[in-house]
Image (cartoon, rainbow, N blue to C red; front, side, top):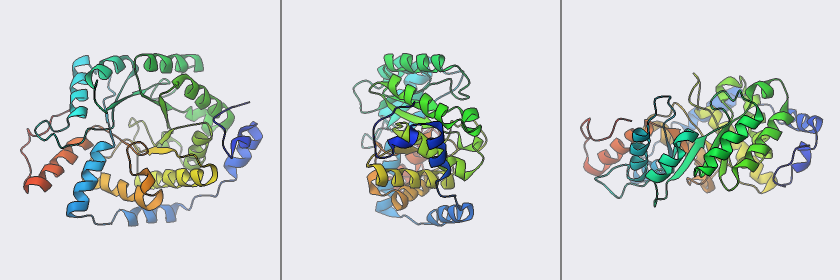
Length: 316
């Protein structure tokens, strides 16, 4: 039997059959309506003072990320320095929320952001495929936490989920959450592999029932990552979950969000769907690498009236 943090819906995870009944009893997603609403909210115009606020808020929500096989300690140290002071010549620029690295780079990242508000997040559980025994996944998590990770980004077993083995996925998330200790847990669904909006809704509720602190769209390693529609669907899920349980869960779209215009569209989605309570980096993040540079360019444009040259921001 699975166990997770107690809440009003804890009894639905008592068995495989009760969990399946609950997840398949969720309302079906109107795909046309969902995409139309996401598109409509994306047309909202934000100008001047509100835009300056939105840019700073977006910067503060970035999980500045490097997840490459060629990552070096020097690259991670540079990333940490950029996270703490995104614009070294303008110290009014807010720090990013976190830096996100592989487990073996956690200690290096932790040292690079020491003394700042920047958290260290680490992908774990055999990221990005998640194809490993549970014992290996838990060891991955424990090592990252021992090295100083404040947050763990885990991937679900998409094969088990798509085969309908919901309790197995639930139990794995519960076990990872326990291994996290005090670290916050972000549960990655890889929405591009879940095929349907109904599956994304079910995965969202499954992750929250298991104790996720955040639900996250994607690894950034597949063709389809965060979209306004799948993020809107997840925002509806966290809103409805809090209404039923009193438990608030964060949302992290990741992959494919590259411009300030994109980021602001997502902030509008947050405000109009979940509400102002989620407009804070404790509850909403952007998983990104190149987004920060565009935010910094647009921020300077608002301040000076002109764009900087190509050497204004570092190339990650």
